[in-house]
Image (cartoon, rainbow, N blue to C red; front, side):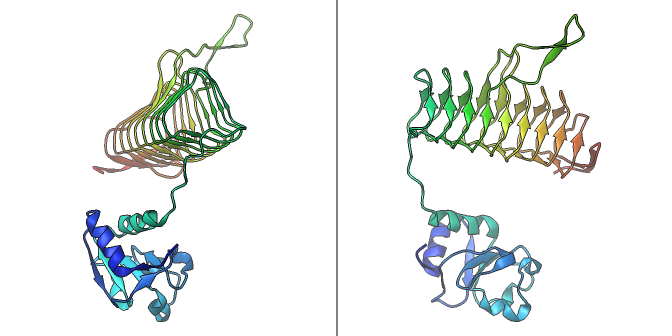
Length: 301
């Protein structure tokens, strides 16, 4: 990346609505960004607390630019500090402004896209991916390599479907037959995905039986997640390494960390399920839960 002067950084943040104040040398400039655990000279870093920076205090003067809250203890010991009420988002905004946007790659020659699929403007489909008949994909959505989008799936605009994702296949539904074995249930529903959704590598979202499986606008699903048939997920949720059983209903702005949600569970909005949670009962709005089975440990998030 090109070297950025502190004046350029501050101006860009203020124009974007960030409240910030710089203390340090006027000739401060950066040529990259660092993780606190492996700081690189000449770069910027953000800290919620100095304990996250893997440098001795005697080495803090090597940090070219620190993003920090005004009340962060120890910040005054760094040579150049950009004080922000929200230093993480301010830092990420600057990082994003330096990232070169990849141009739309269109449809790769090794992709298979049905003539009966409807693709919006600027859609990209990577090598080895399959988009079946009856699929609708909104403007600016990127389908990466080796994904499969089954018939009837609706994907909104500006989504990112990563490698190996499967959307719209039959769910895991069976009934006992007269011989005591299992007969697969028909799945006549669809998957409907909103705008600005991300689905990580090798995750899958099953279509509904008689109603649609729905993923709301802005929701982000990490790699190796499973969303069962008829599930309803609200807006702006985060799922990481999580399994959602069929017919579960999840509200808006929920976070699930390496969790498992039983089928037919109803979960409110603003719920946080911590690592390893096994949710077997309904949860109201605004609670945090942990454990197996999951127990509410905090109310009023």
